[in-house]
Amino acid sequence: MTPAARQAAEVKEQMDQLQARSMRFADEYVGRVVEDTSRLIRAQDDPQARLALSSWQLTQANAAYGNASGPSPVVNALDLVTLASLSRMVIEDTLMPRFPEAGQQLLATHRELEKTAWTLCDEFLTPSQIADFHGILDEWRRQHPTVRTVAFIHFLDFAKQIGRPKPGETARAGGLFGMLGIDPLAGLDPAIREIEQTRTFAERTIYYMQRLPYVVNLQLERATSELLTRPEYRQILSDANKISTSVERFSLVASALPAQISAEREAAINQIADQLAAQEQVLRPVLAELRGTLEAGSETAQALESAVRSFDTLMARFPAKKTAAAGESVAPSRPFDITEYTAAAAEFSRTAGQLQQLITSLDAQSPALTGAVATAVDRSQSLIDYLFLRAAALVVLLVGSVLGAALLYRKLSQPGPAR
Image: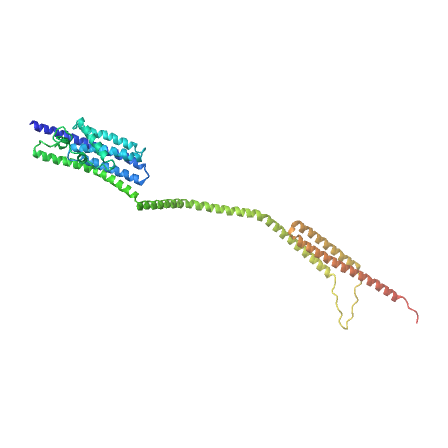
């Protein structure tokens, strides 16, 4: 009921609200930074760039959650403002020269988050104190232009490096450094103070533990990106990619193999069928010619057989001459008959006609046998000429013999002179 107790309760309520706002801002800060950074990571092919961006989002998330769960709400708010402001400076100095186009979205996000972070100080800092805070941040950056890791820099750490507060500023109630000593539990009963300290500690612990899996997930992503930058792991991934490509190609070949075998088998069968058809077209005329040749040869054999039989019949007409044995009387020979020789000549003429017909038939049936038939005709003609000449000589001899015998008989039949 005392004024001091009511003032302490009001300060505590104000600090609780500031703590809640800081925690909500930390969640928004991590979500937007990680989202834009992940989008930029997916657009990169360089493993080193992916590793740098993964490290950036991991440190940003870890620092934001750590600052929001600190023991002093005022210090937590100042640390979040420090994180947002210095991170924006690093993005402008480092990230934009490296990614001038792809990093525009991330830079715009950091600028918006920085503006939101400064609104946390509106309830406990005056405009002059906010201006002093801006000056402290700019001065620190001028003194440390090459620092890239700003996630673990807190307000108290770099504020002391800038210089001590002005004389009387720490004791002045409205000074910037005087705000750092505000105790949200001052003026409370000691027992209530201990209970509130335990409660706020539990709340901060629960807050951070609930976000810890998210931080661990970012840590795993960073570890993966770091592995991809090492030569041995990159070689392993390259070999695995080659093996995967080989397996995929083998799978495609294996899946297409049955169809390919079927197509090759069908093509082979069609090729064989085409070759057989082509050979049939070539062999058909040859077989026809061969058949005609065989038929002509058969007719030739029949004609020759007929000629041989005719010749045998002719030779049978001439009896074999027998030699008289010693002491036997020789029978008188048959008288000469010109009709027998005439019949033999007629038989030779028929044989010659048949041979001539045979030659004509062979010439029409098969040109291939022309040479053989011509030879046979020549030999047959020679044989006929030879037989005809022998027959003619025989006729001449017989006629001469008859004439001589007639003359001898006439001479012997004339009466001789008387003795």
